[in-house]
Amino acid sequence: MSLNHVRPWRNIYRRASRQIMVGPVPVGGDAPITVQTMTNTLTTDVKATIAQVQAAADAGADIVRVSVPDEASSKALKQIVPEVSVPIVADIHFHYKRGIEAAEAGAACLRINPGNIGNETRVKEVIKAARDNNCSIRIGVNAGSLEKHLLDKYGEPCPDAMVESGLDHIKILQDNDFHEFKISCKASDVFMAAAAYQQLAEATDAPIHLGITEAGGLTSGTIKSAIGLGNLLWMGIGDTIRVSLSADPVEEVKVGYEILKSLGLRHRGVNIISCPSCARQGFDVIKTVETLEKRLEHIKTPMSLSIIGCVVNGPGEALMTDVGFTGGGAGSGMVYLAGKQSHKLNNAEMIDHIVEQVERKAAELDAEARVASAAE
Image (cartoon, rainbow, N blue to C red):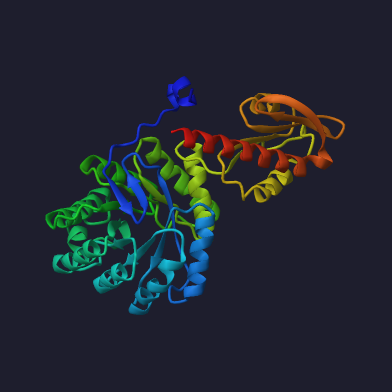
């Protein structure tokens, strides 16, 4: 029996959307919410770009976007796409021909910006290239690059202008009988982005790509994204997400998963529940958690681990996690397995022992999943 069945207040009812394919990855409908990032290497540096795409994929990225600012970059895609394990989205601005070239080079999706892609005739050529090469499209509206006529109409970037831009381009795609598209309405202002996405969700059944653009550095950008994306996801809006950080793309993937995990929308790896620590702690909680996060990065199996410094909340948290450790006295604490007290453990042996227990539990869960899959 799932927790959501027992506790209905935990339910999130996702907005109904059409499903499209980005390469082999489904987006929208009943598919899991996908996590994306974007490379920041020169696309023409094929080796570096492949390495960064794969690092993001290893961290859990389902889709990776690559900038295509010139013809040399679109040619580089021919070498990049066959060497990576995730579908590539080509990021197209200003030059519609780059979109045509990227589709022909094997991109799984084209991101086009209504504010700078050009007139309808050019968009039609991009649509034809996408259709001919089994490529989907993302209409990527940005508050910072809206069409001039919309800025003249509304006076400044605003949710109404962003949504009108998106719907205008949806109409172009639909008038050309092209329906393999998703859409985003990004802004760096959390309020503007949230308002635009709420309007957009009511106006179309297209899959929605969520993002707070130019969110900032690792700490500030994570907070802005968690607030903006978290609230929209809580409302059931969003089929794929990208956390935009001035940081390593791998960090974007990690933050994206943490946002989804916090809402119970996607699970990957070890969810560590830990206390902030205080004078009652029986061991150095902060250092322990930092070490465990690094030591457990290789675990992809969804599971939970509680690391609590003392017996105030430790036993209660451990009852709800797969593996737990609660600080005690005299340099030792209590290990919990499957919510039950198991054995005492010296603090000096804690890290290696907890890693061993987590790896063992992950193996058990993986084996159970294989059995269940075979029985279906």
